[in-house]
Amino acid sequence: MAKKQPRNAGPRLGRRAGRGPNMPEHKHVLVVTEGTCTEPQYFENLGRVLNDKKIAIRCIPKGAKGNWNPDPLSVVEKAIEERDARDGEGRSKFVECFAIVDVDEWGDKLEKAMRLAQEEGITVIVSNPCFEVWLAMHSSKKCPSTKREIRELVEKEGLLMKEGKSLPPDFPKQDYEVACENAKTQCKTTAANKIGPVPSTAMPVFFDLVKRHFSED
Image (cartoon, rainbow, N blue to C red; front, side, top):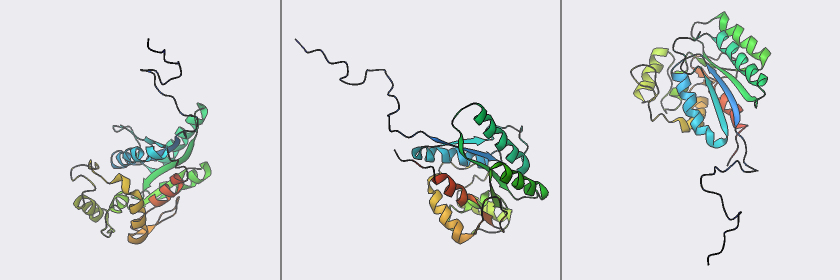
């Protein structure tokens, strides 16, 4: 006669294993972008890579469908709104809050946005003249200065689709460390909440801040 299996012999079928006692929880990072296509795609894809580091990225806008005011001040105000709403709900707080903006022709609005962000503890990541500067850092080619030339470069290097502003399925999102190094040598890396020269990007600062919260399995 077969022996009865003790109750604690193993997990029951159909029962989902819970979180282990020493398994680190995800740290939540808020990213609010000026753009509604390229930037959200990039950060949503990046979130899949950083999931292994126990980082969860909440990216806004997502599916904005025209209901988005794409200026730097609105981006910072939305970041403040989302952060405060999460705090009010009693959920785990965002460990970092970012506003991702371009220089474009915003003038005083960008300056006002950065002043408000500093008062509210929001980190503004500025790319000059456009976010595509950061995409170009995933290539070994020197980044040009004009928006048109930058767009031509990233399309030629297969880093942006020629139709629309979508990222290709095989965009090297996992190569962010290489891109950070390229940014230090190929263009000017600027500090957060600052407008750098053309071309420049503060995206390496984004990764410096987020990497402080990395956890390994």
